[in-house]
Length: 318
Image 1 (cartoon, helix red, strand yellow):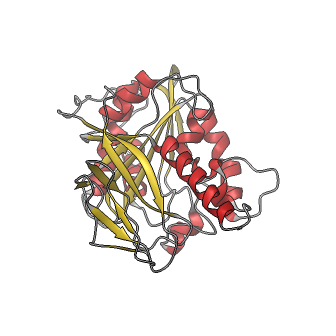
Image 2 (spheres, one colour):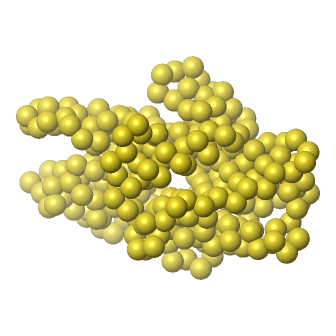
């Protein structure tokens, strides 16, 4: 069962949905949402305009077991399915219509390695085929007001490029292309689906999984989103200054269990041009092509899955 709490004001306004525990071991959003629910129940927070929908746990099976996913990653290939085969397919059939019925999404996550919170946002306005979008101004304002100073863009282009390289490698090795890892739609998660339905969305990575301050980051962000959209009469804190904007440029897959990092990397560790990042099992070197940053290094990545991302400073002004 998937549970949502919806509060509809009698005055018109935007429709905001806030989601937690898309990954079951990322509980900061759940804790923050429960805190907001308690404030509404006590009469300390009143939704005066529009609609607020709170989904504390998007993946109950994964949450119950304290793990990232139930049968597969809910935040990949998120789309309705006429013939659901996995638990997350059935979740998507409920969650996707909820997302489509709102204007804005705040998706709350956490990450494995130490590091400071950051926001993942979508593309600039465009009429392209990969991720067409027309609500950049609203999404940028939401990203800037969540209380963190680092904003990261470029997920879909980086992921789509990674899928293309993966397909080329599989073809060169005579491997079948069946399976989600060779499907560009596997990069579609909650925010990408929200944009495909005409809304706008951001993912807030609130800190390390067990960081006791992460629920506070998530709680502050929910209140900021409510204030920015005018759903309640709450004070709006100005954006942090300066804002650091980075762009994901490429994703590197792990090919073999013997592939290894040369050091214990943390997201947003800086990289110098030609700096050694990792070694393939056959001794091949992976080096930074330019100055930038490593993002989402995953020492536990399975072969054939994304291993780490590379990012550079973005020229986009949010």
